[in-house]
Length: 135
Image (cartoon, rainbow, N blue to C red; front, side):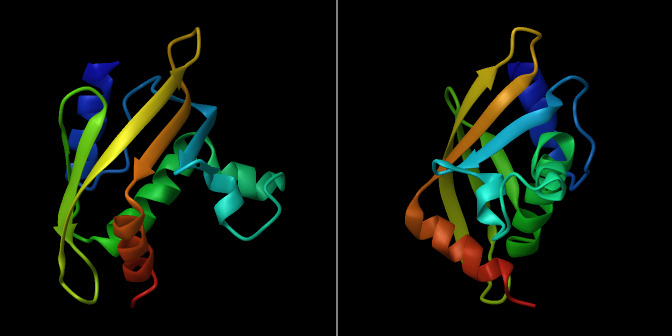
């Protein structure tokens, strides 16, 4: 799993939308600070279109594009365990961001990620959200 995560980080840092084979299933759920991604879109979370956009490889890509919009030069590095560093400059202000993201994975018996939860410090998350809506 660590090798596949390192591959995912390298792809993210290259701004590629490819994924390591078998890392995510179409049902993989992404969670941000305790909130499932599908609940953050302002639409009914059980709407089939919302689920299609927020789960699995499509959900990863949708979320990644939002992050790369907020931090165009975003880079991720893996620290110890499941701690990751996000760095770059916020869109609009150019303010540098350096924040730790804790990742919690629930792995399905078949070896793919069933649930991926990111825990981001609230102040950093607020800055990312603000930068995401800037032109």
